[in-house]
Image 1 (cartoon, helix red, strand yellow):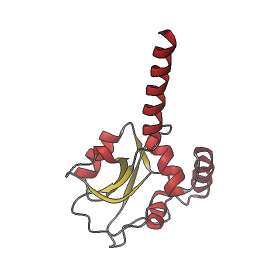
Image 2 (image 1 turned 180 degrees about the vertical axis):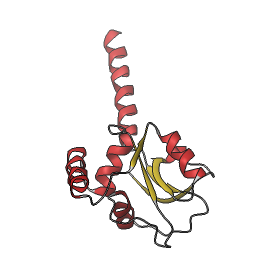
Image 3 (image 1 turned 135 degrees about the vertical axis):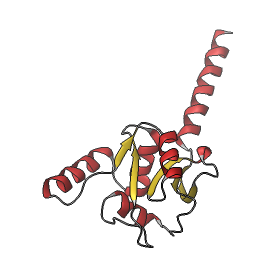
Image 4 (image 1 turned 90 degrees about the vertical axis):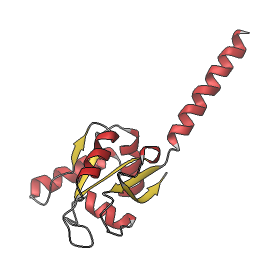
Length: 141
């Protein structure tokens, strides 16, 4: 009986963890933002290479704190970098005066709130948190 319970517990943990690892993430903007963004443009915004959306309005990228699952997924899938590569990148940008990293917030609800309140903000959240207060411009796993 103990083995069966241990097996069931392990199976549940594996299912929960694997489901979390494959959760979809959405890049979000304000619903009134008419910008058409692809992966390349989003990466350039978050790397400080673009300061505005394609339509010309100012862009303010927001990151979730380092270590969050959505942040790691975003960094690797969209930016093509891991945490240490991004630290090195931003250290160089700061040292040379070429840019500053995006503002960081504690959680995805805060990102959603900031995006919903400000047409200039762009961020990312788990797709299951998306509602009509924001607009999805790109989704990825």
